[in-house]
Length: 452
Image (cartoon, rainbow, N blue to C red; front, side, top):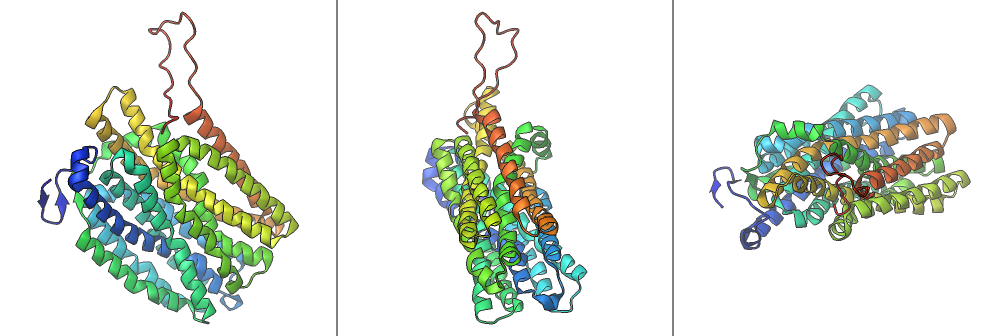
């Protein structure tokens, strides 16, 4: 392993167990740690409007529909910027881009600090909220970077820990907001706390992270990933898991306020619990997928998500706050498990395709890394769009019915489709060859992805 200026690592082969045990694991874990820190703050900045709207009482002149629209647009930007953020790692290097992407978080945080007061126009809030969306991009670049550092046998755990540590930025900023609201502080106190933290994350990335020279800018990989149907199938499944997590993270507090008449403080007391547990459980989802197969864990997770959503529909119709809160927190936990298992599936799918093409050893590993890394940005971006759909669904449900019940019915239908797709594509066994069929004339057998 040879390093050059700018903390570039020239040779990196995590699948070589001797290399991994001697030096690779230590370096990979160090990069994982500081990647998690930067991504964590990125998630906090991206979702800061989920708590800022709790501070915005009647004096701000915003309706519930205005607030759902605001959080929907923030989610949308976070989803879209994930695509260029993914490929920025190959252009600039993982360490270098982490420094830049962390520093960029100062822009929406300072802007929000400047405008957060009654009398500011709704259009200004929308514009500043759009800036916060860049925090969502940190996830994509971080996952692409960490994917290249770890061997396939460790990816479920590493990607789960990386994503879970980032996701936990959502409940952390909500907890901080709870403390500030409880102390009768204002939203500018919250924003002021994060400005120095952003600077610290950028400085630590500069001091302790590395770039991998082997991660080249490969536009061919991006095109190949976009043409592969599994990229879009996994994008849809990720809508069901991460799209649910981020959408509910933005909407939970608003639903409690609008449907159950909770005050900002009362809503803040419980809104952090779901995202916290969903974030902490994500590495468990990845580890379970490493052990039992991501497709199996994902399949049964969608069954559980559907059951939790059915309970939410009942609780919503009966106006039972306790049942509603317990079921919603349980649904958050399941989104976290599903996040971990679906992301584990991605490298496994492309590794399976490599073997089906006759590749073995390092050639198969390189093929899998190339396409899985390129596809992660697209999958992460499309999956995050699920959060936009959830907030828009809640907005329309409250406009039409005065509650979130209609939205939950739509989510239940979505989870049923996700279950069916997971089973049909990744767990249904290919049909056996009919007796006497000629291998030369039959179609190529369907690959089995049950172990991914």
